[in-house]
Length: 66
Image (tube, rainbow, N blue to C red; front, side, top):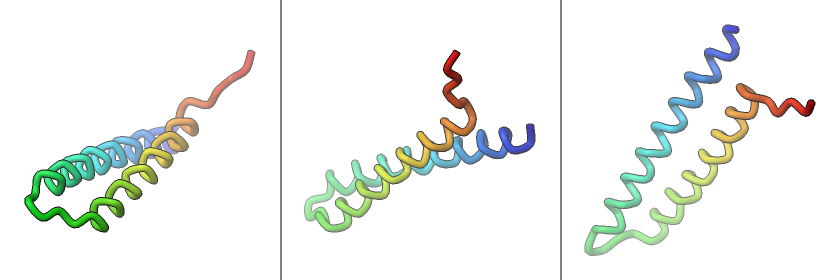
């Protein structure tokens, strides 16, 4: 049960970081002179976080084929 709780906490942290990156990307897009390279890096990190969230969620709630 401890492992599942740790995974749930990790998933919450990943979701928060994902939201923070979303806000950073939005702010960068609104800037008059946005740094395209920085934006690409943030988007790539955001995709990586999404993949990690999916893996973590699969560990918490594994697919059980009946």
